[in-house]
Image (cartoon, rainbow, N blue to C red):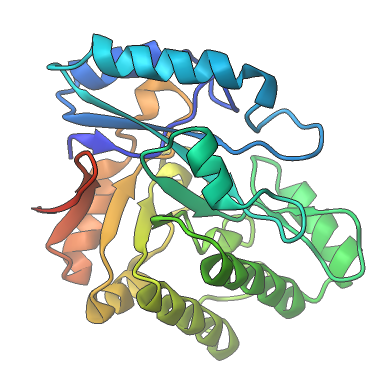
Length: 279
């Protein structure tokens, strides 16, 4: 699958310069590569785009698109971190950074009646567990419902094209606190899928959990992929790369899952248009 639309570089929490990802993509026969740094946030952190580098980044992206024209299509997007009452309006960031497309994601959950945020991502499951106990008294249903409520609010209030790893709340769970086949959880997923369908979003099939050994399957997994197929929601396979060698990480696994789910095409960005491609 010669494309990746979800890539992080040193301008957010990636490990290399954009050029290094492009060189790797060309070597692997990619037709396109999309960069999607974590959007700026109004508090100090070590993972999101730092606004003071905006001019430098915009100039670099414009130069890379020209420099590698004819070899590979380079696109500049943004992975928008949605936090109610804190993150910027998506459309404002799109215009300010001249983004080709946006990925909408939730990594930091805002619990009711707390000023702190529950970090549900990253390599350390103990942070997930601590937040579950600190903010939700260990009530996993309440915690997961808060996560999906925030995802749904993002869908209903913001304009973006791709919803990123929307069931990633399962990553640090690993069947310790809930199972994905429980009725209450399936109802939450069903509600979100209906909103995705209504708002004509693209579902990202994110492979990062597999090649980082944090998940046995993609985000989302096979059962949700079957629902996506029945709902005729378009999908896109992304590696969520943070290092050049990860740009096609576990793509083979994703292809097998798509085949098992009966999904026969993916969508990709080809410059102002989204194009379906047969697998």
